[in-house]
Image 1 (cartoon, rainbow, N blue to C red):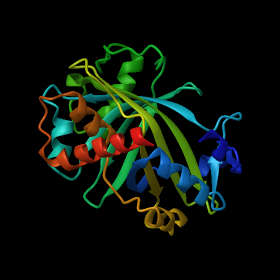
Image 2: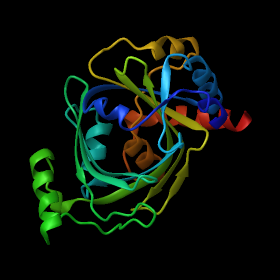
Image 3: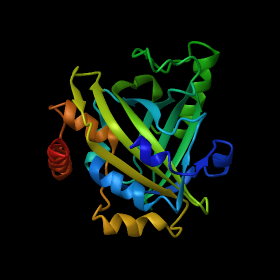
Image 4: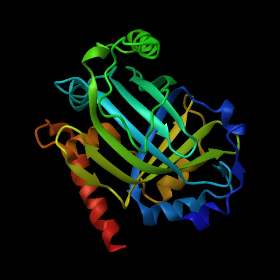
Length: 265
């Protein structure tokens, strides 16, 4: 994989500063490493790869919060619009950490609000975080959450964490980002269970509105079809047998098929 993306022209973080896409439409695709290699070879002439000090595959850490009764998960599982997620997202190599609220509205658009998560260490994460107003830092978090989140922040605790690797591509017109996530690993903080999805690839096309996208034709040619995939919901369903999962059953079966296929490659 690394040898293929090394042939791409780079794009720096400074160049990407105008492509934040904080109010965007997302389309996800699920595939295998073998198909990903083919896609990267096809996309070479139309995309640049994010490069940070020579590094083109970045490490990510995420901790997801939920209510005691898993309401954020349940709302998504039940197919309700206007759902929200709360997470800490860490860009491990750069040392950047953010507390993020993601809201998906009735029109399928995703809005993301975030604030710096000061002092968080993804290599040794604090799993006891509670959003109480105990000091100036947490008063800032409380104000942020009460402005953007529809849940009472004081009842939220961490439920799930994951680690993964990400390749980020940008089309040459700078109207979209393509994130490619591999080596997904989940740990459920409530059940203690783990799930390793190495071999599975999650691709996400992020655009402001419905801008023309060169990658869509390539995905069609490779028979990689759009498929909703929430890391929080899939990771939770795979590591907590007590959760309702009726509306996720087909996607969970698809995950197992892809993992089996990846093992044969």
